[in-house]
Image (tube, rainbow, N blue to C red; front, side, top):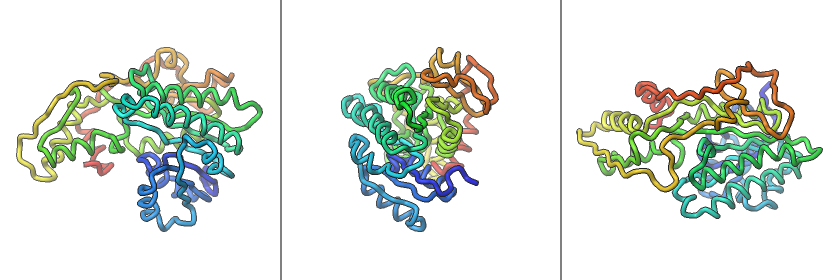
Length: 332
């Protein structure tokens, strides 16, 4: 039987890219209800139209993770919470740092408190590789939120709610992703604006992101951070592949310009999946690394193929594989 069959689920930020794909995937497991919690009423309307065949299983709740009272009401009777709500745009967080703190840090603490109050079974938080050695406000707030989730295992006392996190790279095609931006620039301006062609980013498809979320939630025992093994993409290669694919699809002439503008405030040239200290304790499986909680004694797991590793995958993805990804996910 499916892990989510007949269960009650809440997704914060449920109208975002991850929330949307997660909802679509979870509906296949026939949950009793999925509550879509977000402050975007228009996106909720669009999702309600698209999923009108599942009207008896979907509930759309207007709310903000900054509002703990609203979260507490929204979580009544819920089994699993997927906390996807966040401010994610790096420049926006840099220019509005306290707003990022309010949503990403205070909002996460509100989710924790509401879940404990309602006796939720499991809470899974979606973090980012930008939380590792952060150089920007977004990364710093996600690192703090990650620590709050892990520490919740310690602070929850006798409550049974389990808290864990997944750490993403860049999700291809998500809102804020460079892929739809590059495509739009090519079609409208005949050019691509790039910060730095040699910038390296960990990439994952929406399908991979959702499968990581679901698998991590099933395996979590409390306080872990699950990190998908992701290939590295050189942004110059990504731009070249998208230019070639868009030019071919729309029969454009040659002469697409590449405008290099330099790294924006707070950006890193190379992202990381884990710190060195995390690498020394991480449990490695074929698909992911599992960083155990430092707040519990559950340092050994019996349900993983354990192979402690100090090595991170740094293989730059081949252009042919990148092109296959873009086609499979219908991104270009």
